[in-house]
Amino acid sequence: MIRIFVVCGALFAFGGVLARALSAHMLLARLSATNKLDNFNLAADYLLIHGLALITAAILWRLFPHPGLYWAGWAFIAGSFFFQGTVLVKCFLPMGMLGVATPLGGLILMLAWLLLAWGCDCRTTLTA
Image (tube, rainbow, N blue to C red; front, top):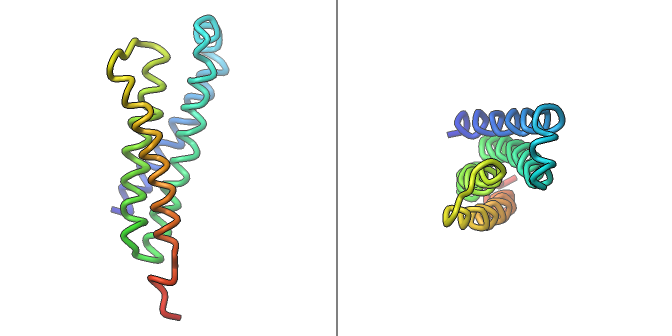
């Protein structure tokens, strides 16, 4: 599981850097014309942040095997697909009712951060 979290986290961070580069160079005119550049950049930034958070959750889970850290990792993955994924898609395609996934993804990301905090309650995992 740790390897999956680290690989996904690294791919999310890569995607964030790539999306930011694309928005600054190739997509600037296209997205500015449709007022979607801010949304695209928000999704790119969130990919970076949550990619690093996922890697952090994996490292912490290795050090302090707590179920909160395990579930935080999966919530970061799911929340990122739902939130950042739908925001990026909505910049180019109409999503209709699938756009409901965006706020659901945001809620899952908030849950992931709470799970990370719960998992780092070292009183439940350390005896020293």
